[in-house]
Length: 455
Image 1: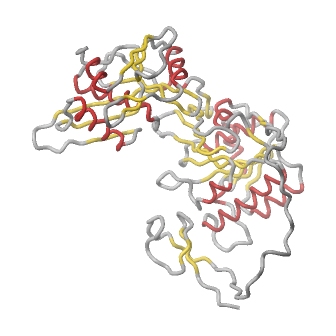
Image 2: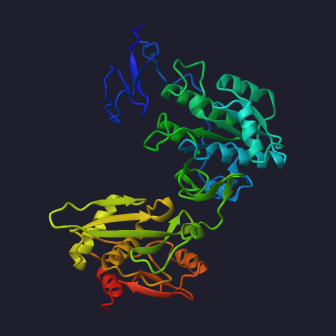
Image 3: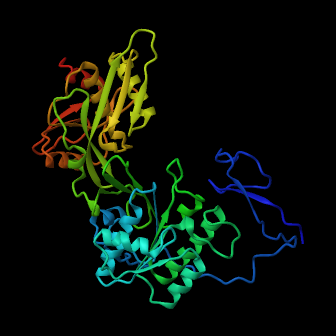
């Protein structure tokens, strides 16, 4: 029998090293390597071609029924899930501390329990009385859900095995769970991986829909090994700023539905309330006669959301270094748009500080926002407001051409519903906008001429 080697596991990314070092070679984080006991190494070789259990091979074209879904009673939560909870599925929900993860899951659990479903809520961070006080504050104190405070995976699975299989199981949070089969403190890479594996296996075998709450790092990523996101069926991110009352539940991965779906909530004294019309939320208190603002119909999954893009330019004295600040959009994308406006359209931003903000703290990743950002920048530079009641969308190429984007009809329909009467869009896009007036632009220079009154 060979001597077991010591190994050091990065608590950030799960990378394994056989000697300690200050910086992880894979993720670059400092002081994240922790020693873990290595398994005993046997030098004998084993032939794996025999002695196992033969698995059944089936055809790809077999009859498969769509998995039934259970609605939680919170429409925005169901939209983000792709239509509701799937029996036997495992969902991982991450978010900043205090963002409302436990509150949302407690509300969903209470709704399901009131409808007669068997719901179990396991809290590893709070005592049972603390959860009861929160439920009472939310007006859910009479919900017949089953509550426990535990951190041992063995105790939890033993308890669940003695009772009926729950229809909905919440584990809050996976970083507080520990398995007695693995050495190490709760929250380490090995403990999180082993605990999640046992709980997910229980959900798959029993048919219980399970949600695991996950902590996040300072960078916003879910803490623990990256393999945790591969093990579950759905990964959801609960986003928002504490200074704003709204929260966005975003589906990052979903094996049973579309990704990039979002649910929008508003944090109030009575808990999280649904925002059925998020476009109206992000456009509230908007003034049409302000230079540097443009309305963009963003697309999140299958849902269009209208957001306001704000731009500000400040002239500097000669010789000063201009600043570029972006909130809610990609800073590299802003640099590209500014370069195209200078090179292809003759506008000068080299002596201006440029500030770009997505109103309400919303984050936009849709490439169709290029033309709306360009419109806001042109308006801010010329100090001339954009035409009232208009939206802009289109992708800008480095050549200055404006390219078409997907789901244009959805974007136009959402804008028309909120009272917008015109749209500035790529020339190769749809020619039918219903009652909306469509203005097609082939190049970004055409947009500059239109907004500055040169055409």
